[in-house]
Image 1 (cartoon, rainbow, N blue to C red):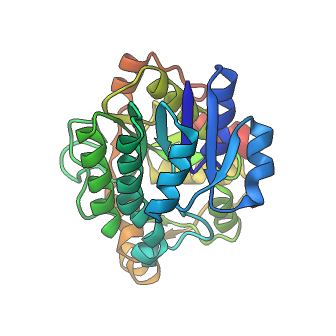
Image 2 (image 1 turned 90 degrees about the vertical axis):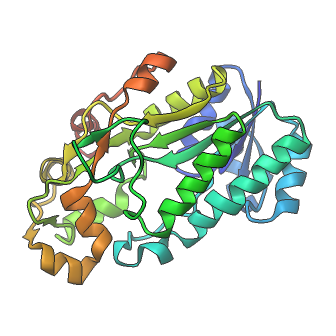
Image 3 (image 1 turned 60 degrees about the vertical axis):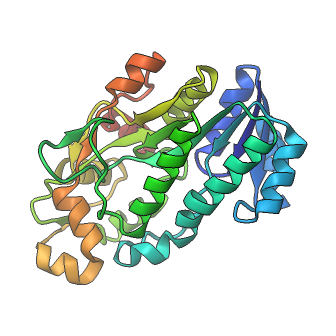
Length: 303
């Protein structure tokens, strides 16, 4: 199958491309510059420069590749996390999830691409009502990640309407994915806020990639939570991450102080976040995780 991976040079793309190639697919992978062409070629992809916010660039890249499936993995998340200024930190990613998604869908329609798979997010942003673990039937929280919530809602609505698959990935860990968090932990700048009762869902990059391959091959439709088996509160996973990384236990700070220093989003994540269930993806994809729990994954990846 000819697969077009938009954002193929990103953290997940670099794990996804070789899995697709290993299963016999012909992959075209995009990057915003030629600097990563060598990496993409080593992974087995045909590299192409594409600006996901430029409709002409997107149209030309898709027309040249003539794919059967487009996989939308475009984000612009890099550098030190800035939860206090979340909308500013995620501004370009929000545009890629709105404008970029629209450009890719338009190119797909113009070139007769029969299937579309897109990246969404499901770590701690479930609706803050009821239990701590949410399914695909539960709405995402409309306020938890500022303008990002509206961007995700747009992406999910247009992709599902087009008959595609939305993959709500949990928080990534794996090669390069948690370096910034670990650095903050080692500097003791990543505390547990309040009671740390807010839940997160995690997923290893390789498990996220394997679920994506299945969504491509099965031509999945609808929304799927791509997370591990163990949603957990911050008071459990954060000290464990620190221990696995050889850092001192994280400090604890009261809610009022965290709100002043880190902003509302950090407080919400740590104290009210809702995790997610992966039962639907496991059932419909036959998905088997290499790391069913972040406990095993953190231990192996961060040691």
